[in-house]
Image (cartoon, rainbow, N blue to C red; front, side, top):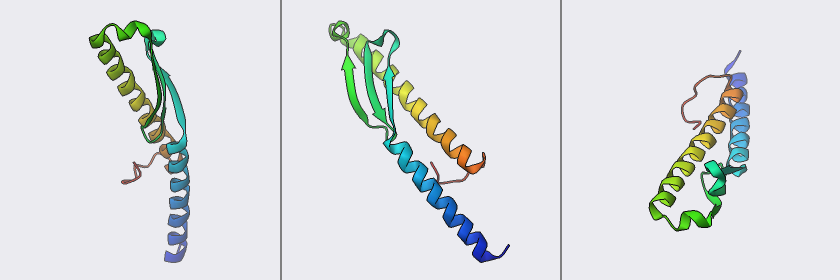
Length: 100
């Protein structure tokens, strides 16, 4: 294999990575806490797009804070894991620095 072929393959791989990253950033994930006291939508850029809070939680500030932190952290972890899995499928499980 010559250097030109290797460079061409690297460019193709980069285009695929860029495409998948863009798709993952645009993807929306619906989430909810246990009992659905907190519900919402987050995208692959880790931006909260919508958030609904049960009236019951509005009466207990500490409980609301705890549920929000727990729910949002859990969802951020799930989105990160989904992104890692998508990249792993593309790279065949190889750990390529700089992809995420």
